[in-house]
Length: 605
Image (tube, rainbow, N blue to C red; front, side, top):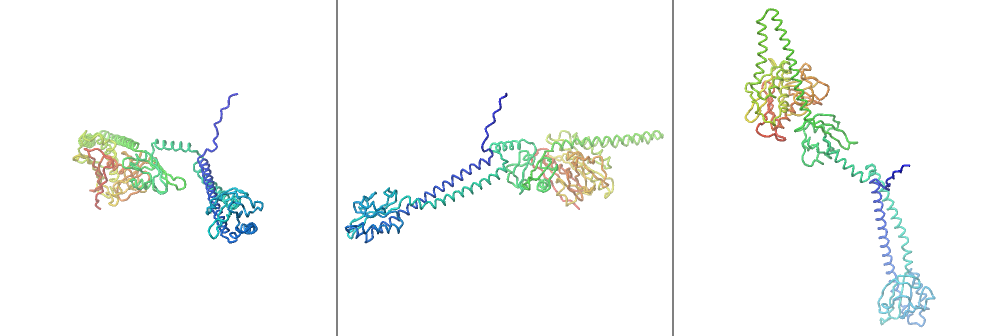
C-alpha cells in the first residue's frame, strides 16, 4: 500500500475576520473582567471605610454616655452596662459593643460567657487617651473594631469601650452589589460579543473569508499586475476622483506627480476625453487624442454606482502605420485610375489614326503628356523632399480623378536634406495629407456655390527657420463660430451623409484614425478615398457651416494639430476664397512636449 500523504495541520481560525473576532472577544472579556474586579475592590474599600466610621461613632457615643461613666465606678458595672450595650448594639447594627476596665477585663459582651475575660485586641493607645481602629480576630471572628477611652471629669481614663462589625457582616452587605456587578459585567460581555460577531461577519463577507497571508499575497499580485500591464487603467470613485492610476495610464495621458484623490476634471485631459470619462453611458473602443498620443477608451461602471473603471490602449503607432498604408492604397488607386485614363486616351489616339486624322492624334497625345509632365516637373523641381513630393503627386492624381485641380504655388521650394531628422515622414504625411484631403472635399462640396472649377492650392516652402505648409481651397470656408472647435476630436461637418463648407475630409487616410473614412460630395456619393469598410473606425473631419459629433469621426484635423504640437509648431486658420489652413513647424529647435497651440484667427463672414 502506498503511504498516504499526511494532511497539513488544520488551523482553528483561518480567516482574518475570525482571527479578529477571537482577539476582540478576548479583549472585551479582559476589559469587562478588569472593570468588574476594580469595581469590586472599590466597593469593598468603601464598605470597609463605612464600617470603620460606623463603629467609631458608636464607640464614642457609648464612651460619652453618662450612664457608662457612672457605671464604671459602681461595684457591679455589668449589671448596668450589659443591657445598655446590647440595646445599643441592636439599635446601631454593629456586631458587638464591649465595655471593659482599664485592664481589658470585659464588663459586657454579646456572648455572656465572655464577660469577665480579657479583651482580644490592642488597648494601649486607648489607655493613652486615643481612639484607633483595627481589623482583629476575636471571639466572633475577624472584625473591624474601634477602642476608645471613657474619661471622668478630670479627664482620667476610667474604662474602655470597643465597638466592631465582623468582616462576615461586611461581606454580606457586599453580596447584593456584587451580584448586580456580575450581572452588568455579563450583559456587557454578551453585548460586546454580539457586536463583535456582527462586525466581523460583515468583515468576513468583504474579505471573502481570506486570511491575512492570502490578503497580503492578493495585494502583491494586484500591484504586480497593475504595473505590468501595458494598457492604461484608471479607477474613479462615485465623485469622479481618481482612486487608482497605473504607470501605463500616466504615460498615455501625460500625467505627472500624484494623481490619486484628484478630480478627473483637474487632470488637464482634452474636452472630448473628459466628457467621455465623466458621462454615465459606457464607452466601447472610442478613439481619442491626447497631447501626444492616439488612445482607445473603454469605460464601465463598478458595482452599483461605486465608480467607474477606465481602460486605455495606445494606438498611436498603429494609427500612423494604418495611415501610411492607406496613403499607399490611395497612390495605388490613383495609378490604377491613371492607367484607366491612359487606356482611354490610347483608344482615342488609335481611333484617330484609324480615321486617318494623324495630326489630331499627335496633338491629342502630346497635349495630355505635356500636362502630366508639367505637373510632375513642377513638383519635383520645387520639392526636393521625396516624401512630400510623392505625397503631392499622389494627391494631385486623386484630386484630378475627383474633378479638383490641385496646384503648387510658384513660391513653393523645399530642398532635399533641409528638414531635420526629428520631423518624421509620418508627421509630414499626417499634416499635409489630411489638410489636402479636407480641402479637396471642401472644394467639391462648395463647387455649386462658386464659379469655376473646384481648386486646391498648396504651398510648401522654407520660411526662415520654419517649414510652412499652407492649403487653400475654393469651398465655403469655416464658420466663424466653429473656429474654436475645428481642431477638437469629434468635430465634423458630416451629418446624415451631407457635408457643408470646407470639407468633409477623411480622418485617417494620412495617419488618421483607421482604414477608411466616409466622404460625401454633396450628393451622398462614396468616392475612391472615401470608402466605408465596416470597421467603424473611419472618420470625417472638416470645417464649414455645421458640425457633428459621432463615434469614429472628427480626427483628421485633430491629428494635424497633434502632430504640430508634437513638433513645436502652430496651426492657423484663415480665409481667402475659401478656407486657408497654415501649419508652421520649426526647423532649428527640438520638439517639446505641449509645445504649439492652435491659433484661431478672425474669419470674415
